[in-house]
Image (cartoon, rainbow, N blue to C red; front, side):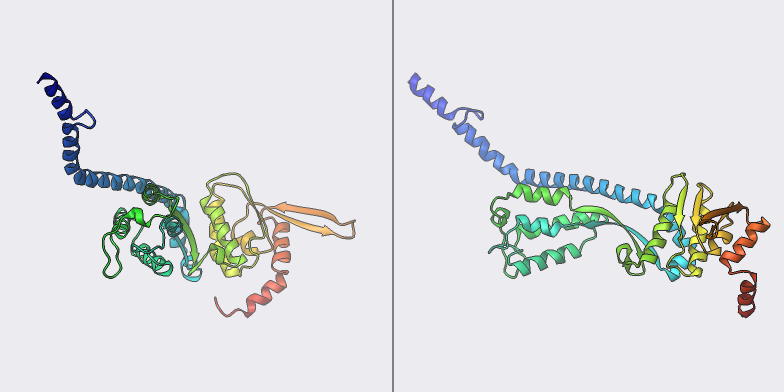
Length: 323
């Protein structure tokens, strides 16, 4: 009887004795808590994703602060806003979710993303519906993409296992890590001229915007040397766009400009003008004359070289009707 009792107790065991009745009873009881645990873990996962997204948003905000002078310049200058239609935007954009997603999800016979063309269109539609710039937008996107993985969204679709949609050599863990780590989201800043971004602009347009950045955005105070910034630009643009930039920038740094444009030398109120002259008769010797604009010799040199002499300047002025 004692031996039988010992065997009975061994079979009943405890919740820590692997293979005993109480051990399996505990396992069964724990299964009842799994749905709630799963819900809790999913909520924690989303909270962590939001924390990651908050860091990305903070980086985007840093870009906005860094390039605030450009926005201020655009708002203050009618030419920048009306003629050039300059617009500076900072946003959080998708940099390749679709490619990474389909590296792990098969276009097989089950699930929302079944079929190559159909699967890509389905995911593209989901991406287009959501704004990655906001916490609510990223939460809605992650919720929808997970729902699309767990339920076949095609007509008459049913619940499906995520594991049945994973490509060979990949795992569900890799897929969820890729979705919730949000490595595919990057802050992106874009300076547009009309509907064109920087890389689509002409050399003259691109050079103008680059100068605006150097003059207004860069906070360094070291001297800046600019060689003929007026190239490929009309005089109105030089006067209304470049001149205000240069005047503002020279308050904090020294600027050297090589130019043939009087709007830059005179209207920018150059502190010193250096006139270079090549003497071909004297073995191509370079002669330099320097001084303030008010210096009679410098004043005459500016008129002769940049205006084509005073008679030419007077001739043009006499023909202009606008005052």
